[in-house]
Amino acid sequence: MARRPTDEKLYEAFEHFINLCLLKNQSLLYPNKESWTRENVTEVKRRMVDSPLFGRELSFEQKLVKQMENASPEQWIIICDIYYLYFLPSAHISFDKKVRDIHWAAEQGGLTAPPREAGLWEALEGGFTRTSQRYHQKYRQFWLILDFAYKLKTMEDPRAVISSPQMMQQILDMILENMPNKADRAYDMRHAVLYMTFPDQYERIISSRDKERIVETYRKQISGDIPSDVDDAIRRVRDGLSKRFENLDRLFDFYQDIKAEWRPKGEKTPPITVNVDDRTVTVPQDEELEKERPVPTGEPTAHTEIQWKLLKLGNDMGLDVWVARNDRNREIGGNRFADLARIKKELPLQFDDATNRTIELIDVIWLRGNAIVAAFEIESTTSVYSGILRLADLISMQPNLNIPLYLVAPDERRGKVISEVNRPVFSHLSPPMSELCRFISFSALSNKISHVSSVVKYLKPDFLEELSESCEIEEDQD
Image 1 (cartoon, rainbow, N blue to C red):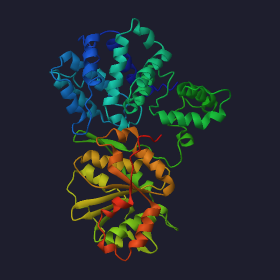
Image 2: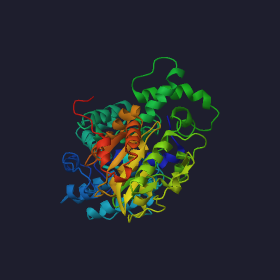
Image 3: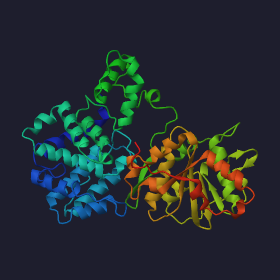
Image 4: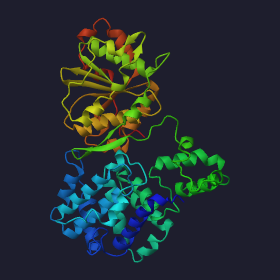
């Protein structure tokens, strides 16, 4: 349905995995080795899936080394092959990193990775989709591949599954639904596996939300009932839209050709992710930053007003203040942010470049000397996800950095903010993001400022604890 000539090497590589690893017991990277036996798959699954290691203290690779302690070279070959499969979809992870990580896995098993000249590496040079922070938390993707392989190894006729899109989809969905923790369900890898196996039946879309948006956008344009299964529904949508693109010399693509129609206006594509000290973090691109919040003309926005109030409040309390690098030239009521007496032109923080790049984009920061005493993200627009990501990335890059984090938003957006903070990707952090962030409403902040104007210089930053509220969801809340 969305087969692309540029992805032929990728389809071929995944077909080799199916034939060599799943239907036989051989390896993708080491085809002369008998590694994907039922016994080896069961043992690797026991170590990784059945005995998970959570928490932020160790990186994925450090946890993997612990889980695979004393594992055989054949079992490490399975890990090498899974790394290869995991990297296939991503057009964002660099080719050098893909090769480097596979070499690392091979070394852990006392193996020598195939040489760079080997043809199998070509499939890793491209990729068919952007991959975001959630995908880069590898354990979910590895688990699904292992669970799927284990399921096939225990079946009498695995070839029947491999040859049927419907059966493969059912098996993958069953595996995911049987995972007790929804945060562990790798729907993105599910979508990727189906596309790489059956590119004539599935789209190159690994986002469940994007698939749902497409169906919702074009539902009324398609005659007849829309199937409840999202992949079946997208097939109907493609059939219905095909006449619009009959003059193309290729199959039309939902991202390349009509993304502006179904993606909400103003919604940003996920930022680039990088690896910092074995942690995956997101760093927005400069050109996206400038487009995200242009300097306003005319009436100031609610975002600008609250940003000014927080900067002025911190300044009047005798604290140094920082405003997001791309907001420095803003002004309100003739007051320029850059003219505040205690605004910092440079952050006095000794972190690595990636950490500093993230901190510089936080809306407002209060500092005492070189120490951050409070960080604020103001969320007054449609999506609150990007601001939370910045705070999450800061904690991910500096896990021992203990500073108060606040999300400031209109009163009517309280539920939205708390819901976003409790997304699975943030809830799975240790401690969960909901325990690290607190919510401040616009009205509560404005009322407080009006009541303390005469004594503001005596205030201490900890007054925010009383002003704010927890983002944790009560156990009995739906």
